Length: 114
Image (tube, rainbow, N blue to C red; front, side, top):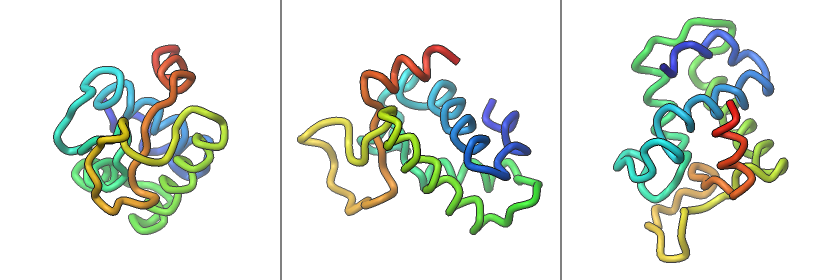
C-alpha cells in the first residue's frame, strides 16, 4: 500500500523509492490503464491526491511534498527509468508539462525488481 513509504519522503532518495512503490502498486506494471493516470504511468496530480487522502505526516508540508515528487520524477528520468510525456505518440494531450511520465523499458524492469 502507498502509505508505507510516506515517512520517508523527506529526501529525494525516499521520494524516488516512494514513486517506485507507487508504480508497482497502482499504475504502470499492475494497472496500466488506470483512468486517473490518463495516458501516463505516473501522473503526479494523482499521486499527490493519494498522498492527501492518506493524511501524510512528516517533516514536509503538502506543497513541499509536491515539489519533492516533481524533483524525484525528474531525477528518475535522468536515470533512464521514466521519460516525460504519455505512453504513446497518440496519447492524451493534457498540457501536462512536468506532471506526467511514462516508464521506459529499463524503468519497467526497475519497478518489477522491487
